[in-house]
Image 1 (cartoon, rainbow, N blue to C red):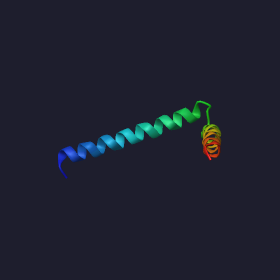
Image 2: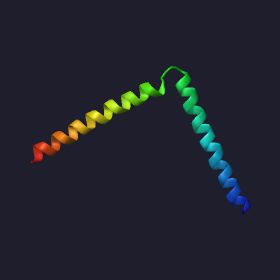
Image 3: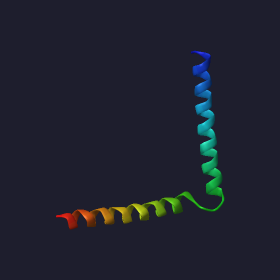
Amino acid sequence: MDKKVKFLHSQQFTTQVKTQWRRIMWDLRGESLSQYRRKLELHLDAINLFLNTLIWYAM
């Protein structure tokens, strides 16, 4: 492998490790991932309800 390619791969690895570490620290600060997932599900449900209403209204 070229030195530049190796460098890019090491940068990507470092970025991924930092991202995962931030997620762990965020979870440890109190907001658990299950709570976040539930909030996300509620938002998606609201969006789906809105879109379904628009679709039925258009018919």
